Amino acid sequence: MWFFQTENGMFCIRYFREGYGLFIDAEYLSWQRDAEGAAKMVSEHRTGHKPWDSLGTADAPKDLSEWKLLEEIQGAANIKPTHDPIVVPLDCDCGHQIKESVARVRILRKFRCPACNKDITVEDKQLAQIMEKVQQEYPNGLIKSLRK
Image 1: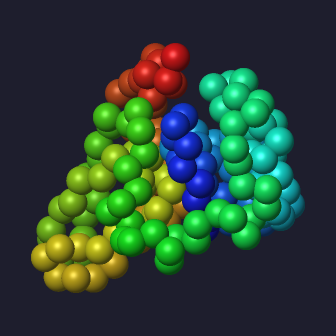
Image 2: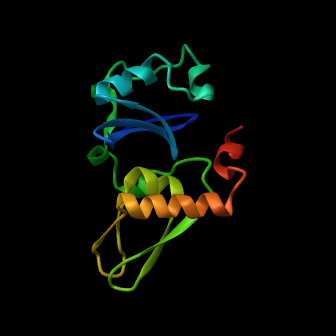
């Protein structure tokens, strides 16, 4: 996964549906065959995210080599997507439960249990269930309404 922080939020490029997905915070923007294509969309301000795209002159990485890899970010705890007040519980096999924002769950998909130090991985099916529940609880699209 690659990350690029802007004033509008954090862009993320990650493997997605046999290609690469471009996200800003928890919002899916587009699919590309390769990660470079997704990075180019950000560079050219053609992401579909109006606040970013309207800044046509804002500095952006020219290519993927200028993005940060997940390993370069000091711990997943430093990724704090903006505009996401929705928190969901994640259960560990040890019985401990942690709470994470929907944005962090969608982007990172893997967390460390503080009780037993094991990984809690959010699989595609579990993520779909989480998102369905969030949509039921927030039918008016709370995340998107906060971006306006």
